[in-house]
Image (cartoon, rainbow, N blue to C red; front, side, top):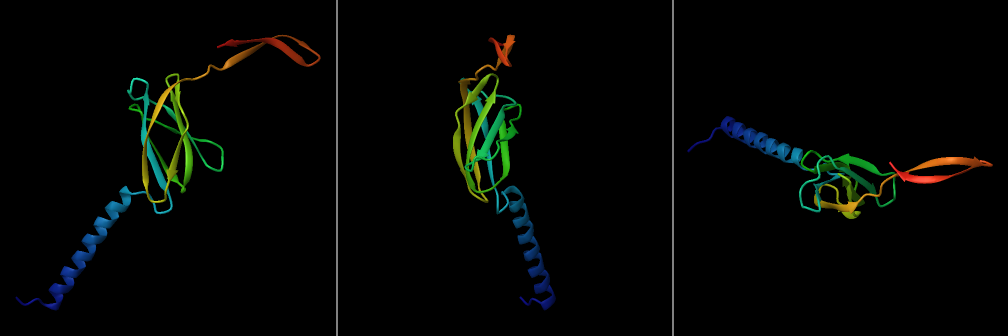
Amino acid sequence: MKISMKNAWIAGTLCVLAASLIGASNAAAAPQGGSGIVTGVVVGADNKPVPNAVVTYQNSGGSAPHVAHADAHGHFTISKLKGDVYAIRAAGNGVTSAWENVAVHPGKTRTVSLRAVFVKEEVKQFTATHTYEGQSEGTATPR
């Protein structure tokens, strides 16, 4: 079988295009090279998803906490994370999870399950009964 230079060039070009399209679709699904992803689900004591839970996370340097929100099925994704160890916990429906330390590596996705079983402490409301030289006295009552 005789292959002309023109046919060889066309075949080579098609192979390069196909390879670049396959690489582009794989790159879209993977995290960017300099960042990582944490994805997971928040479940309660009954192992059922906690809908619309608030997921709080911060890096090992103790930066200000950031927040992500789970969907109606308890699933969440936190993207564009720099390589580090992150403290992550979730809260919703009156319960919260313990802090989990999750190592994030650039270009990788970590999957975690956060189990929210601890009852959140109620915020107390302070009611001042009177003041004395700028000091308040009163009682704390649940809202």
